[in-house]
Image 1 (cartoon, rainbow, N blue to C red):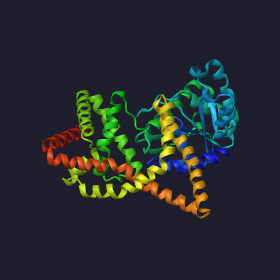
Image 2 (image 1 turned 60 degrees about the horizontal axis):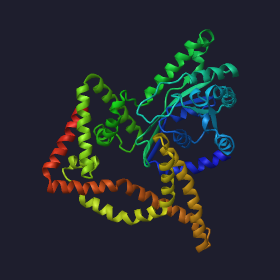
Image 3 (image 1 turned 30 degrees about the vertical axis):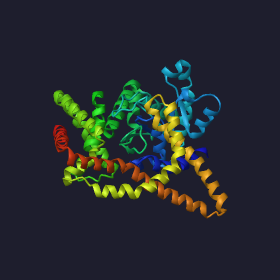
Image 4 (image 1 turned 135 degrees about the horizontal axis):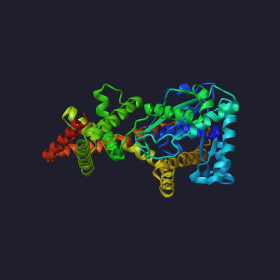
Length: 438
């Protein structure tokens, strides 16, 4: 019951918090067989919350670090949410690991009823554009269930999650399910050589996850990768006739650019360093002049800055933006404040911001309903107010996500009219960056 409430709370807020969200091939999870969902883990508990909302049915449960299960209310709350504690040696020591037998027993009984449980096979949460080595615990659980429950229909389904900006409000989030791995294919080997069966299954799972997860080999390119997303993503999509609003096409960009950087870094390290330096210079230039690459790219295509349309959109949308900003200020401010104060690790920032924001928005909406009822004493006024608020919020969100672009167009126009040489330097630098990528 508690989970149904949470899902009804989080699902609409997901549409507000993320710019776009999408799942691909998730229908493979909708099977009567027991399923272990092996999900990569860059962004704390929002990885599983958002997945459960996007998949919606069937319900998914998931395993989380056992040290979060404090005695009392917190433990009961986590259990009611559908979280099964799993203990690592580094967190709970030997005593903690012993408790895993009870957790495994709970998971086995749930799987035996055809439930779907999310497991994070990397064993830790780190916000990187790469897949961490897959731990053997996932394979051990799979064999343990198959052996104890005498079943050969157990499936491991790899799922990847990719964020455009993992820790920021307004990010895109994309899930893709890979090819299901039937555990029965390894059971005969497990009877004669358990260690080899565990190794083989772990390697195959890692390979399947890598097939659906953009993977940058060298950490030295992490910042460069994020910068190139801002510079080249939309140009890449347009040049390859891709739908710029389709997140599946965005995922193709991530695979393309990570593979390009891996090849350049491996075969031409001097070119890799040159690309890093030029990209850093270009990004600094944009920031110093309050420009966005989106407007620079538009300027290149039409050889002009769209000042008049930007001015009209900036002026006409401003009143609605201020109204929505006023309506949403308090819950959004409180959620950000709590995330800023409590999150020492960047991996938890979006999760805390999302969950607290959803609850504050709910409480604030109840308060708003009370105010509307107090003044109007009309039940019909409540849904009318809610629908109006949603429409205003949607318009304001679109405005807020484009206001920097509008301002950038003005600044680009000023650069063109007053500092033509600087603009030429900027355009040439961008051209050199694209050439180095290609």
